[in-house]
Image (cartoon, rainbow, N blue to C red):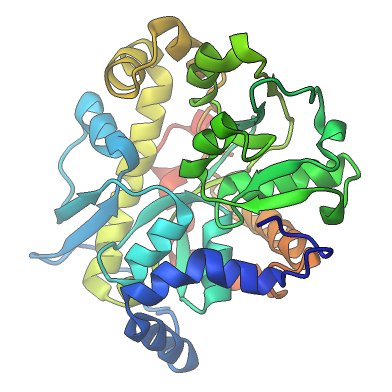
Length: 355
């Protein structure tokens, strides 16, 4: 169902219906516990432990097994804690649901999922930042489309996932093009539904990751599909964790020990594009080697700033943009950052990979 003021759909109800139903199925007790925590002691400010206590374990998100493969290929040492589960979870709504169900302790996402979690009443904090300088997404048209640029989005159906990075990229692109939300039809979907929606003509446009576009064009370019580049940057690639995890002194120490490996794994794959193309894109993503090289050519150099000042400012702009559209209520995003972890990632990588 398209979302616009004309349709009479309340944007906050839209958010609840899109992201909250599965969360409710995961158990209302998790939300109650989170809200209770927010009303009492909140996030811990205790200094991080110098050593991870014996027997500590973490359940870590590793979408498409990226982290494990990076760690293996980079020959990084085993962490000083047990990984009790690597979960193949990447989408923000899925991560939030896993956090609620206590089946996940730390995850890698863009900047928007922590904002959505806050709006839903779930307490989680950002613990590491990787700044993105080049666009990770572009817009793909359905086969046979006459759309040539973003100005042509007016009056069209756009795939929109407000709980994921793709959603904020779309909103920022519309704003830059001078298009109001009411100028388009926002079709609520999650990113794993975008390709099917394009193929079937359910939507005219969907934001696709740089890694998805080559395969889509290989199949549908001959049928009139195309991509439209955007200079809109989704600035933040981050690690975050539930407050309940960070309030656990042992688990917080384990999260701190995981951050350097997360950063070093990204640096390794950036520095070894040939191996990464073969081992990840070709062997696990079914791209041809030329397609993999095209994706790698667009890859961002990982940057782990010692200070989170820029990240906080960008996150505030994102939250304000969502609030302007009526998707969330305004709030101070500074509450989303756990500054005990600030600088850990930067200290673990060479200077050229810092801000």
